Image 1 (cartoon, rainbow, N blue to C red):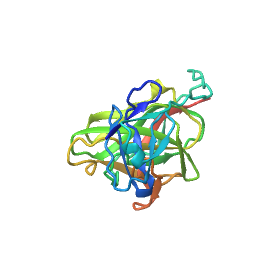
Image 2 (cartoon, rainbow, N blue to C red):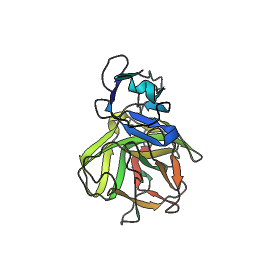
Image 3 (tube, rainbow, N blue to C red):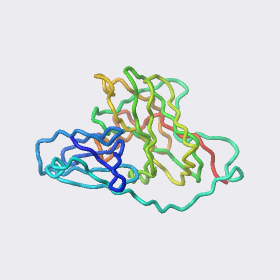
Length: 255
Protein backbone atom coordinates (compact mmCIF):
# COMPACT_ATOMS: atom_id res chain seq x y z
CA UNK A 1 0.00 0.00 0.00
CA UNK A 2 1.18 3.52 -0.75
CA UNK A 3 0.04 7.03 -1.63
CA UNK A 4 0.64 9.17 -4.70
CA UNK A 5 1.03 12.85 -3.83
CA UNK A 6 1.58 16.21 -5.46
CA UNK A 7 5.33 16.75 -5.19
CA UNK A 8 4.83 20.49 -4.62
CA UNK A 9 2.02 20.50 -2.07
CA UNK A 10 2.05 17.02 -0.52
CA UNK A 11 -1.66 16.56 -1.21
CA UNK A 12 -2.88 13.16 -2.34
CA UNK A 13 -3.60 12.90 -6.09
CA UNK A 14 -7.05 11.39 -6.70
CA UNK A 15 -7.57 8.47 -9.08
CA UNK A 16 -3.94 7.99 -10.13
CA UNK A 17 -3.25 5.22 -12.67
CA UNK A 18 -0.62 2.60 -11.80
CA UNK A 19 0.13 0.01 -14.47
CA UNK A 20 2.54 -2.91 -14.80
CA UNK A 21 2.59 -2.78 -18.60
CA UNK A 22 4.72 -5.91 -19.09
CA UNK A 23 2.18 -7.97 -17.14
CA UNK A 24 -1.03 -6.33 -18.35
CA UNK A 25 -1.99 -5.45 -14.79
CA UNK A 26 -2.81 -2.27 -12.97
CA UNK A 27 -5.01 -0.34 -10.59
CA UNK A 28 -6.28 3.13 -9.73
CA UNK A 29 -5.77 4.97 -6.46
CA UNK A 30 -8.68 6.26 -4.40
CA UNK A 31 -9.68 9.92 -4.05
CA UNK A 32 -6.83 10.49 -1.58
CA UNK A 33 -4.17 8.93 -3.80
CA UNK A 34 -3.98 5.75 -1.70
CA UNK A 35 -3.52 2.49 -3.62
CA UNK A 36 -2.85 -1.22 -3.20
CA UNK A 37 -0.91 -3.06 -5.90
CA UNK A 38 -0.33 -6.81 -5.67
CA UNK A 39 2.74 -8.17 -7.48
CA UNK A 40 5.12 -11.14 -7.49
CA UNK A 41 8.14 -9.91 -9.51
CA UNK A 42 9.91 -6.98 -7.77
CA UNK A 43 12.00 -6.11 -10.83
CA UNK A 44 8.95 -5.35 -12.98
CA UNK A 45 8.36 -1.69 -13.73
CA UNK A 46 5.24 0.24 -12.80
CA UNK A 47 4.19 3.42 -14.61
CA UNK A 48 2.40 6.02 -12.49
CA UNK A 49 0.34 8.71 -14.19
CA UNK A 50 -2.34 11.26 -13.36
CA UNK A 51 -4.10 13.98 -15.30
CA UNK A 52 -2.22 17.24 -14.83
CA UNK A 53 1.02 15.61 -13.65
CA UNK A 54 4.22 14.26 -15.20
CA UNK A 55 4.31 10.46 -15.37
CA UNK A 56 6.89 8.47 -13.45
CA UNK A 57 8.22 4.90 -13.70
CA UNK A 58 9.71 2.84 -10.87
CA UNK A 59 10.59 -0.78 -10.24
CA UNK A 60 8.07 -2.50 -8.00
CA UNK A 61 10.83 -3.11 -5.48
CA UNK A 62 11.57 0.62 -5.30
CA UNK A 63 7.86 1.39 -5.11
CA UNK A 64 7.40 -0.97 -2.17
CA UNK A 65 10.03 0.94 -0.19
CA UNK A 66 8.20 4.27 -0.50
CA UNK A 67 5.21 5.28 1.57
CA UNK A 68 4.57 8.25 -0.69
CA UNK A 69 5.36 8.77 -4.38
CA UNK A 70 5.51 12.36 -5.61
CA UNK A 71 4.43 13.45 -9.08
CA UNK A 72 5.37 16.84 -10.50
CA UNK A 73 2.51 19.08 -11.70
CA UNK A 74 2.48 20.00 -15.39
CA UNK A 75 2.48 23.67 -16.31
CA UNK A 76 0.23 23.86 -19.36
CA UNK A 77 1.04 26.36 -22.06
CA UNK A 78 -1.99 26.24 -24.31
CA UNK A 79 -3.24 28.81 -26.77
CA UNK A 80 -6.26 30.72 -25.51
CA UNK A 81 -9.40 30.13 -27.55
CA UNK A 82 -12.00 32.86 -27.19
CA UNK A 83 -15.56 31.56 -27.43
CA UNK A 84 -18.27 34.19 -27.73
CA UNK A 85 -21.95 33.91 -28.59
CA UNK A 86 -21.19 35.41 -32.00
CA UNK A 87 -18.72 32.62 -32.81
CA UNK A 88 -21.00 29.71 -31.91
CA UNK A 89 -23.21 28.35 -34.72
CA UNK A 90 -27.00 28.27 -34.55
CA UNK A 91 -28.25 24.73 -34.04
CA UNK A 92 -26.89 22.25 -31.53
CA UNK A 93 -25.61 19.06 -33.14
CA UNK A 94 -24.67 15.56 -32.08
CA UNK A 95 -21.07 14.40 -32.47
CA UNK A 96 -20.98 10.60 -32.35
CA UNK A 97 -23.90 8.16 -32.34
CA UNK A 98 -26.98 7.51 -30.23
CA UNK A 99 -29.90 5.11 -30.65
CA UNK A 100 -33.55 5.99 -30.39
CA UNK A 101 -34.25 2.30 -29.75
CA UNK A 102 -32.16 -0.11 -27.68
CA UNK A 103 -29.54 -1.95 -29.72
CA UNK A 104 -26.79 -4.45 -29.04
CA UNK A 105 -24.98 -3.89 -25.77
CA UNK A 106 -21.32 -4.13 -24.80
CA UNK A 107 -19.47 -3.94 -21.50
CA UNK A 108 -16.05 -2.96 -20.19
CA UNK A 109 -14.52 -6.34 -20.96
CA UNK A 110 -12.30 -6.34 -17.87
CA UNK A 111 -12.84 -5.90 -14.14
CA UNK A 112 -9.50 -4.25 -13.31
CA UNK A 113 -9.63 -0.69 -12.03
CA UNK A 114 -8.49 1.58 -14.85
CA UNK A 115 -10.09 -0.39 -17.68
CA UNK A 116 -11.67 1.85 -20.34
CA UNK A 117 -14.17 1.64 -23.18
CA UNK A 118 -14.21 4.33 -25.86
CA UNK A 119 -15.82 5.47 -29.10
CA UNK A 120 -14.06 7.48 -31.83
CA UNK A 121 -15.86 10.69 -32.71
CA UNK A 122 -15.57 12.70 -35.91
CA UNK A 123 -14.99 16.46 -35.54
CA UNK A 124 -15.25 18.10 -38.96
CA UNK A 125 -14.99 21.73 -37.86
CA UNK A 126 -13.82 23.45 -34.68
CA UNK A 127 -16.68 23.00 -32.22
CA UNK A 128 -17.62 24.16 -28.74
CA UNK A 129 -18.71 21.16 -26.65
CA UNK A 130 -21.66 21.54 -24.31
CA UNK A 131 -21.94 18.01 -22.88
CA UNK A 132 -20.73 14.42 -23.06
CA UNK A 133 -23.38 11.70 -23.05
CA UNK A 134 -23.24 7.96 -22.39
CA UNK A 135 -26.16 5.58 -22.98
CA UNK A 136 -26.36 2.72 -20.46
CA UNK A 137 -28.23 -0.28 -21.82
CA UNK A 138 -28.12 -2.18 -18.55
CA UNK A 139 -27.02 -1.37 -15.01
CA UNK A 140 -27.45 -3.58 -11.98
CA UNK A 141 -25.56 -2.83 -8.82
CA UNK A 142 -24.61 -0.01 -6.52
CA UNK A 143 -23.06 3.36 -7.33
CA UNK A 144 -21.03 4.30 -10.38
CA UNK A 145 -17.63 5.96 -10.19
CA UNK A 146 -16.26 6.65 -13.66
CA UNK A 147 -13.83 9.10 -15.26
CA UNK A 148 -14.47 10.82 -18.58
CA UNK A 149 -11.41 10.89 -20.83
CA UNK A 150 -11.00 12.58 -24.22
CA UNK A 151 -7.99 11.55 -26.31
CA UNK A 152 -6.64 12.81 -29.59
CA UNK A 153 -7.49 10.32 -32.33
CA UNK A 154 -5.78 10.17 -35.72
CA UNK A 155 -5.96 7.41 -38.35
CA UNK A 156 -7.00 4.81 -35.81
CA UNK A 157 -4.29 5.73 -33.32
CA UNK A 158 -5.15 6.96 -29.83
CA UNK A 159 -3.05 9.91 -28.70
CA UNK A 160 -2.69 11.82 -25.43
CA UNK A 161 -5.53 12.89 -23.18
CA UNK A 162 -6.51 16.48 -23.96
CA UNK A 163 -8.16 17.09 -20.57
CA UNK A 164 -6.23 18.97 -17.92
CA UNK A 165 -8.30 17.91 -14.92
CA UNK A 166 -10.43 15.00 -13.77
CA UNK A 167 -14.06 14.86 -14.87
CA UNK A 168 -15.75 12.33 -12.61
CA UNK A 169 -19.18 10.66 -12.81
CA UNK A 170 -20.43 9.58 -9.39
CA UNK A 171 -24.06 8.51 -9.15
CA UNK A 172 -26.37 5.55 -8.68
CA UNK A 173 -26.39 2.93 -11.39
CA UNK A 174 -29.36 3.32 -13.68
CA UNK A 175 -30.40 2.52 -17.21
CA UNK A 176 -30.58 5.47 -19.58
CA UNK A 177 -28.40 8.38 -20.66
CA UNK A 178 -25.81 9.91 -18.35
CA UNK A 179 -25.14 13.53 -19.31
CA UNK A 180 -21.99 15.32 -18.16
CA UNK A 181 -22.04 19.12 -18.36
CA UNK A 182 -18.82 20.31 -20.04
CA UNK A 183 -19.73 24.01 -20.25
CA UNK A 184 -17.54 24.98 -17.26
CA UNK A 185 -14.47 23.68 -19.14
CA UNK A 186 -14.99 25.90 -22.21
CA UNK A 187 -13.91 22.93 -24.33
CA UNK A 188 -13.28 23.46 -28.05
CA UNK A 189 -12.41 20.42 -30.19
CA UNK A 190 -10.63 20.87 -33.50
CA UNK A 191 -9.88 17.27 -34.50
CA UNK A 192 -11.22 13.72 -34.16
CA UNK A 193 -11.16 12.33 -30.62
CA UNK A 194 -11.77 9.15 -28.65
CA UNK A 195 -14.38 9.67 -25.93
CA UNK A 196 -14.00 7.06 -23.19
CA UNK A 197 -15.21 6.02 -19.77
CA UNK A 198 -12.75 4.63 -17.22
CA UNK A 199 -13.78 2.27 -14.41
CA UNK A 200 -12.50 3.73 -11.12
CA UNK A 201 -14.12 1.90 -8.24
CA UNK A 202 -16.04 -1.25 -7.37
CA UNK A 203 -18.72 -0.64 -4.75
CA UNK A 204 -20.04 -4.19 -4.48
CA UNK A 205 -19.25 -7.76 -5.50
CA UNK A 206 -20.79 -7.41 -8.97
CA UNK A 207 -18.03 -5.11 -10.20
CA UNK A 208 -18.71 -3.80 -13.70
CA UNK A 209 -19.92 -7.04 -15.28
CA UNK A 210 -23.56 -5.94 -15.20
CA UNK A 211 -22.88 -2.51 -16.72
CA UNK A 212 -23.37 -2.38 -20.49
CA UNK A 213 -23.72 0.37 -23.05
CA UNK A 214 -25.95 0.73 -26.07
CA UNK A 215 -24.27 0.52 -29.49
CA UNK A 216 -24.95 1.65 -33.04
CA UNK A 217 -23.28 1.53 -36.45
CA UNK A 218 -20.35 3.90 -36.32
CA UNK A 219 -20.54 5.89 -39.55
CA UNK A 220 -17.14 7.00 -40.84
CA UNK A 221 -15.26 6.27 -37.61
CA UNK A 222 -16.31 2.75 -36.66
CA UNK A 223 -15.40 0.35 -33.89
CA UNK A 224 -15.02 0.07 -30.13
CA UNK A 225 -11.72 0.76 -28.38
CA UNK A 226 -10.68 -0.84 -25.09
CA UNK A 227 -7.87 -0.34 -22.62
CA UNK A 228 -7.88 -3.29 -20.22
CA UNK A 229 -5.64 -1.90 -17.45
CA UNK A 230 -4.09 1.35 -16.25
CA UNK A 231 -1.52 2.84 -18.66
CA UNK A 232 -1.99 -0.02 -21.15
CA UNK A 233 -2.39 0.45 -24.89
CA UNK A 234 -5.81 0.88 -26.48
CA UNK A 235 -7.02 -1.92 -28.74
CA UNK A 236 -9.74 -1.81 -31.36
CA UNK A 237 -12.16 -4.70 -30.85
CA UNK A 238 -14.17 -6.03 -33.79
CA UNK A 239 -16.22 -8.65 -31.95
CA UNK A 240 -19.46 -6.79 -32.75
CA UNK A 241 -18.43 -5.58 -36.19
CA UNK A 242 -18.46 -1.88 -37.11
CA UNK A 243 -20.59 -0.85 -34.14
CA UNK A 244 -19.44 1.45 -31.35
CA UNK A 245 -20.78 2.61 -27.98
CA UNK A 246 -23.43 5.31 -27.94
CA UNK A 247 -21.05 7.87 -26.50
CA UNK A 248 -21.60 11.31 -27.99
CA UNK A 249 -21.11 15.04 -27.53
CA UNK A 250 -23.66 17.80 -27.92
CA UNK A 251 -22.23 21.10 -29.09
CA UNK A 252 -22.11 23.76 -31.75
CA UNK A 253 -19.71 24.57 -34.55
CA UNK A 254 -17.72 27.79 -34.35
CA UNK A 255 -18.17 30.31 -37.12
